[in-house]
Image (cartoon, rainbow, N blue to C red):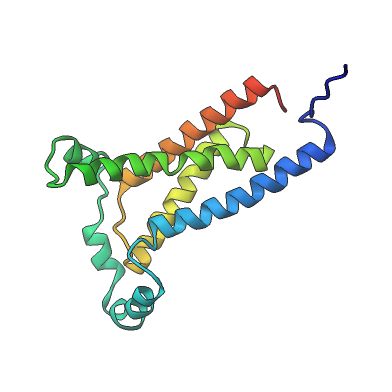
Length: 171
């Protein structure tokens, strides 16, 4: 009796994995953007916001609300200064866990990112981009702690990718 294994390094398998990972990566990035930037509501909310409220918003106002001190928000949540601790845990864990898939999917799709420093920079740039969009649009508050947690999530995802890669022995 013969047993056939699909080898990762065969051309059809590599192409299939690349196509599937590209689709999943795109869907993930769209969902991440919705969750991070457009978390308030549906299209009606944003139509109203950009038609009426956004003209009264200024980046300088948003920057005054921003947290630029590393670990300030994390420490505030840790000390229980936030009234809603479940919301604090959701925020901290969400910022970390929400970015783990990026650390797995990007190097799976694009082998150039199979180096730790490249993934660290990619995660930082993605997070910085999302935080900056929040600042520019007024749809969120810029927080350096989010930047740190998001980037740490990407690094954790990359470590998982690396461990899975070693276990499956693929290139």
